[in-house]
Length: 602
Image (cartoon, rainbow, N blue to C red; front, top):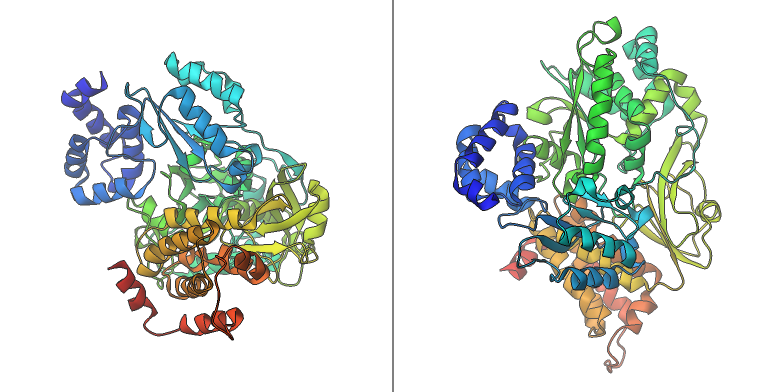
């Protein structure tokens, strides 16, 4: 039926209606492609040709977008497209065994479509369900806590070709797992409370309260929120935009998923407060594609807010117009970077922009745009109500307020915790029931691996900054397995824009593979260190600049572990590994580093 429809007039009518519903805007390309992918299990070439004409954009642009995002395909996937998360937390609960069990029971090879086209199976990057691993997606919807028994149930549903809406709801159960709420998570403001407080106090006076609070970006970068809003407000423009970054793709992070599920009203209220302050009339929430299960719920909340005059024209009779649109991603970790996110909002591949200009000057459609994290907007709404001092009374000198953490891995109580900045790692480990701890990955793969000698360090911008990921590893784990998983993740997620990251992460992955497999020599450790420095120092954006962190932070703490994996070979008299590594570090700063990597690629 699908093939017949592609070959007939039905698809043309369907796509024409899609384009019309989206006002023939090229900025809606991702939304349109998602609808086509859902209906036809791929993007047919006929659809590409028709869209190019309807949206008045080059066919090559559409092809580039399809190739860029992992949830779009040129060739058909199965009617049931099953993706299993291969994040480190999933591997820790037996991901390899369970996906192979899936493959056997479904009679389909991993990465392929079954002969009858009913089902396809593959690995995917972290799905934001690290607190309920093993997790995955079926046709984009989250499935959690996968066991052999639950897999058997899914296989039966697939083989019967049972529609998803008739599957047991338990398979799609996504829990919040809020374990330790504090300043923010204990607040449940009434609808409109933050908006009314903002206008009663005054817009610039509320901005002053946000500045007094010391609120910094909660996505990881830590830029001062009030400054970002002030710069955006001061730009001379006929339109400004507010964007909520809900594309938390960092493995081990799931706190934004929970905030949107249980605190969405406050998040939207924070966006509205920010819009009033900077003078924006349009906002977007960029929701990662893996959170499709939240889409309808969030749309319903937005509709309810419009009905209550909390969005739309003349909000609460304050003479202020503002509305919010949800834009779904399509599987690209790099779109968590704000300029790549903006490119994606515009219907393009999510390639980070050259900066300056920064988004507050030239962002969405080249207009001043403030991009802030979900947690930042939640904090801003509460600051608007309670004032800056209420928030600033907690934390440290440079890190005010609290931080929401996503805690997963080897601990008794995985879930969401909120702590005042300045809290020690040991306190957090005690609270989550972690014992016999080898180390903790703070901030996800792009962050820092700390050993069990460092548990008196603190969560703070001046010590261990984090967007929220906190993965615990006990002494049964192999550090090099962790590094191996992370290096593969970065190689897969590189956008490919710049040579140091595109080539460097691929070479890094191969070098780590070689050492983990026991084929490395001392020279390979030297090359590994040099490669890490090249990627870190010469990459275009934050992905490449942090992609080497898993190697660098573990090599610094466990050099003997890397050396133990080397082949037992004889070295020349006087060989000094530490000295060789230092030489590699100096070489990494050579002016011809970029050219050197380009030659490797050629």
